[in-house]
Length: 146
Length: 145
Image (cartoon, rainbow over all chains, first blue to last red; front, side, top):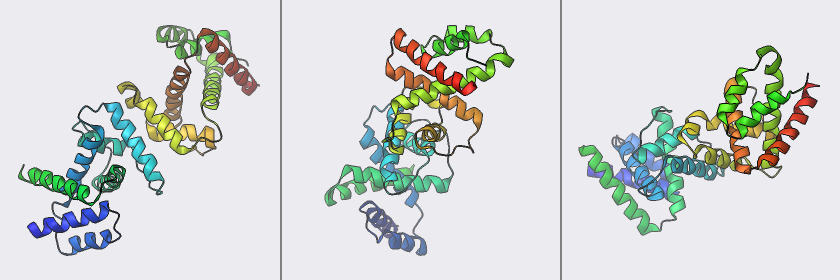
């Protein structure tokens, strides 16, 4: 279990540091049957990144503005995200009520792309990224334990 | 066929935020004689308002930002204005983008909300709003032939 968690953290770290080895690490997770719980890790990381960006007292308007800002940034990489689906994901991460506008596949894609942009915007150094992943792993662990 | 004073007053009341007066004037509308000129006047006003706000340097990113700004103002606007439609409606005017696949009712609803926001952002005084309405009316009359 610990090995699979470490492999998941390594894959997510590769994604967030724009390491081209991400695809290979992700494929390895799938091939070795270590994907269970990866969604929780990604969700936890996204949730932490959103809360760090918005602060504690975010308004519904802040969520709309953040979604637009992420979309504008991602468009520079030719990535187009559905605005309502992205707002839903951010709203859920910020602890708000969610109207589901997306399926699981779309949600997973949105989370990874938006998370990548949020972390890029934070401009973390290596140690900062490690600290962030420790928090995400701890939160995912708490989610798993219920 | 030309735009009437009452049609101008009806749209003016909406843009001035006087919704009671807007609704009151609408109740006097005759579907057959008022529908076409009023829709044309609204379209002309939207065209003019977009033209005053945006220009050839406007990017799709600017439009995403503007629609988000409008949607961030209230829960009602957020619920009523679908950004996927609103952005495309603006891009159609600013960048000549094709929106023939959009639902016409949905597009019209977006135009109405965006028009209100565009005019609200201009903070026009009564004379400024009259001037804007005159410009929109002139264009609408040209379109109606």
